[in-house]
Image 1 (cartoon, one colour):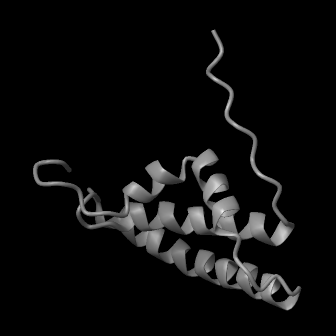
Image 2 (tube, one colour):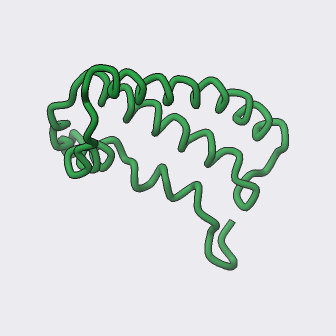
Length: 102
C-alpha cells in the first residue's frame, strides 16, 4: 500500500523556493546543534560549520528576492509550503523539549 499523497506545493518563484529550502536547511542544522537534544559535540560542530554556509545562502536568497522587486513575503503561501515540506516537525527540533523528554 502506498503512503498518502502529499498536497501539492503552492506556486513559488524560484527565489521563494530557494528561501524555503535554505530556511529548512538552517532549521535542520540548528536542530542538530540544539544542546537540549544533541548527543555528541562532533555532530553539533559539523552542523555549526555547515550553518555558516547555509546562512550565507539564505541571505543570498533574500537578497535576490529583494533585488528582483519581491519585497513582500507572502506568509500564507510560504507557510503552506513549509507545512507540505514537514516544516512543523523540523522546526520542533529547535525548541527546548518538555521536561523528561530528550
